[in-house]
Image (cartoon, rainbow, N blue to C red; front, top):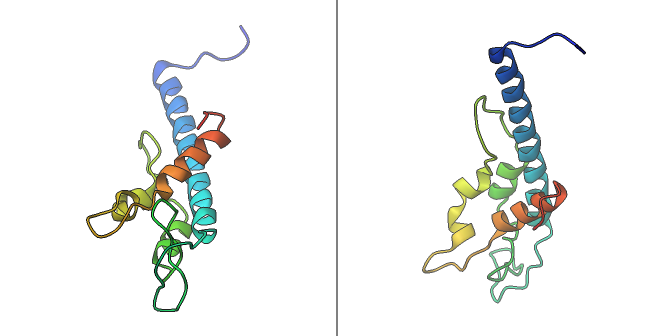
Length: 125
C-alpha cells in the first residue's frame, strides 16, 4: 500500500472540500471576468446617460453608469459550504440586464462571463 486508507466519511469530506474550493475559485474568476467586461463596455448605444456618455447597445455588456453593478461585481465572493455548482451573483441580482424587459434590451454580460470562464477552465465556449 502507498499510504493510509481513508474511511468513507473522510474521503467524502475531502472530495467535498476540493469541490467547494474549485467552486469558490471559479466564482472569483467569474467576478474578475465580469468586472473586466463591465469596465470595457464599448458604449455604442443610441442614447446617452445623465453624464452625457453613450450607453451600451443591446447585446453588449452594460456600461458603467452609477457603479452599483461594478461594486457588486468587485465584492469578494463568499464561500458557501455545501454549495454545488457555481453561482454568478450578478445573474441573480441583475437578471433584468441579462434577459431584458419590454423596455430594456438584453445586456448578456452573464452569458459572456460564463463563456470566458469556460474557455479559461478548458471547457470550451
